[in-house]
Length: 168
Image (cartoon, rainbow, N blue to C red):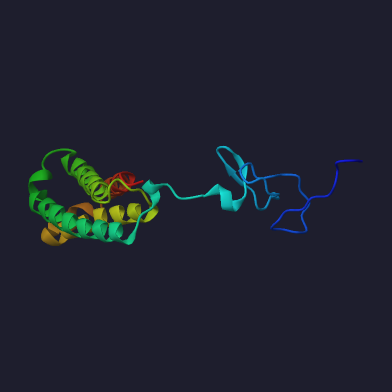
């Protein structure tokens, strides 16, 4: 049949193909193909980059760690000092945990220019947990009253999720 000559991918020479890059018109196979918004392209023409929001560099991690240490120590100390007063008001200690998680997560998000990343989530959750430990060291009553309480530990987990969700 005329016009049915065998064509091969320019990268994988043993793969037969009729697919072409829609930019440079070179032959590409299904292994080399990069699907873009405008169609199938070869790897050179695709120009695949990560979105800037998800490109977290080392300085952003250092900033988030520094902010997390300072914030978790200060909020944990404040939480420990006020814990005796908060215990008497129903549900206020639990709402305090969620508020601390929100403050830590949102603060980290602001410090890193609203960038998002998996490790930033881990950092935010870690420092939420660290604020609980600091509160326990400032006031031993925190550990004595909250550690055996499963509902409190569930709220601590929710606080960690809130912190992590702010940088998700």
